[in-house]
Length: 308
Image 1 (tube, one colour):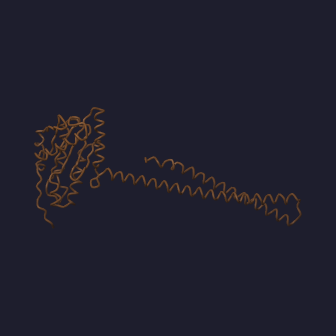
Image 2 (cartoon, helix red, strand yellow):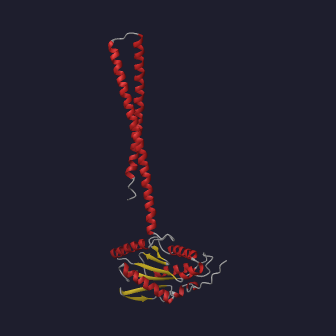
């Protein structure tokens, strides 16, 4: 259901309130006339007892009493209408509250279904949807974009030595710093465990992408915010560029994953990959990339964890 679904009921509420108010006003006027007729009938009865009036007056008095009864019945009916209108307004308000709550619950469920609970980043489902849209737009407008596969090196050792609580902190820190390295139109996702994926829209050239990769490596190497983790962190980044390295999700993901494993194997930090065919990827190495990496990003040596 769209966000606009409750609006027709919301617009009908003022009309119901106005109708109820008008009915109450009519009710008051009818009640006032009924009181006047009752007083008049009482006065006629008193006069009849005091003196003999023409015969037509007695007949008029009977009609007056009949009209008095009819007015009182109408008054009772109006009161029932007012009660019904008031009940209808209360029910509509309750329904609107339920609709609003249901919409809020749907938003929460949608958020949970499409985002990682620990980091708040998009999950694999949402990322794949955005990757599909990026592929469609790139073909339509003849644009390029980059896909990054990112893995935290020796993350299992962090969990084993420092515990899963520290592992969660590391994942949250990595998510935050990766997100800080990209633009608003880009997407950073946690797709499982210590694996992240990044979609860089409208990538200008390989040099610009390499600059972003170096920034990610440098930022994540600094673990000073994690006071209990006395060691730098290292990530490995595999990069595939569309359309050069593929024009389908499967080809791009396969090439980015292969590039990431190459970066992890040679300790280069990040790695580009071309392919002349989807089944035959050919690596491309930026020979200058290692020279600019901080020394702390080269390796991860975790000291023994001493329990207090």
